[in-house]
Length: 102
Image (cartoon, rainbow, N blue to C red; front, side):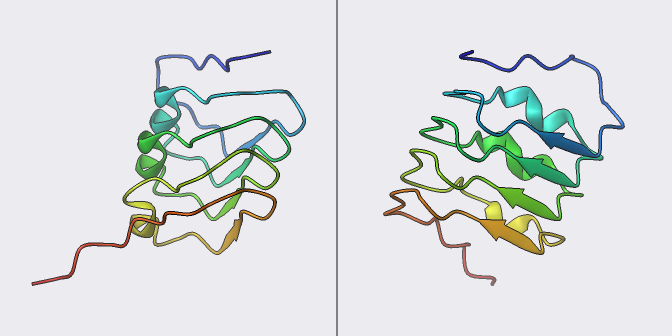
């Protein structure tokens, strides 16, 4: 499996758990999951997380451990409800820092 297809309509989905599925990318449409609280994409082949992920404002738990991630999406710090972030088993060498506030 190389891709995850999401419906083009907003969804009340609160948890998406797809570990160990050989995923190599997530669609940008993941940002349409406004009610998403838990996302587990661990143990896949993801090289990046989509920038649209930062639109999931309700997200409280993100597990992207054991992938091929090298960087985190810019704006991840805007997920103010995020309580759990698991990224072990990646080769992250770049983290986008939030812009300083004026």
